[in-house]
Image (cartoon, rainbow, N blue to C red):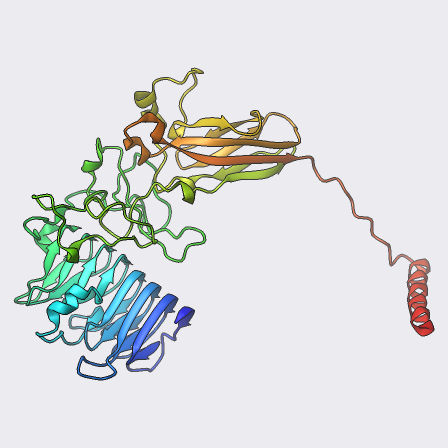
Length: 468
């Protein structure tokens, strides 16, 4: 099922499977499942069947949004076995309403003993490269055979319910924070393996002895509200609020490199993919995913970023900016979405890195430099800390001013050489004279002359048709 939106009725009387009742192999890509409601199980999807059934259901979801789905149990998916795989997916605003261990992604029974280890090594079951926030109920009951890897799971009213007594379940390389009173609740006898997660260790434990969990401590989680604008550097906050860029399907919480960091190793998120003490990789079951939620390649398995998003300095993602204006106008636009995952370096930091400007003027945000390309400079440009640009032309010239905005970001500042600390954003201002052309309209009213002329013209049309 590709590029489909399914929207349900919050007052639906359906017992199981508010939007989909599945007992086969169900593949979802670029799908929105919204407002699904079941009175009992499976607000969005009910996945039927156990491994002994010929038609045991399996759900694969990639680039899917689950939003505002409700059920007593399994508000997003109720599965008789944990036969589901969610990848590059967003779960938000869903609600499991049951009174006893109500869960969004619920597995009724575990895999049998003979199949468990094989299920884990296949990596076919679980939740990866996904963003989960603002939900009600446990996110999932983690069973043997499941892998949770590279997810960002924050600000839900509950965390994981862990019930994997054989130790064949893995939670790794994830950000798990501020999920109700406890990020993790363990069933008796649970042996889920926690590897290299950013969390509150008093909730989720210290984790694997070689690659332990990372204590989040008193660090501010978000630079702003849950959604919307990200507070600019030097504001605190490990993540930007949830944001959906233009022309993208899924939103995300972007990691930040704070101004208090002296080196990349100070970050709790970036480059925190671990290696064992003897230099070999951690087990393949807990390696970072090869790409992030956006499909961007992760740098290396040893130095990946934990959570759903990998910070990537990608020049190909930078689009030209600018504006067309008329004489007497000022151009205003933003470069905030063209900073290759970074934020503008505060102007106060520029002098210590680069010294004083050659022209004696004060540095602007991003240690801005304007590099002319195909034209001489024809105006004055200012840039604020949030990426807003104001361009004032030097008079009423007709044509274009073409240049590059060369800026330094909170990511590029860690590059070894000064030359690599900048990114270039193509810019172009086009200025034209006002359009003084006035359309000339034929008057059809104002007396008998106008109406008479109209009737005469219509008569002529009729005469020409008649002659044919």
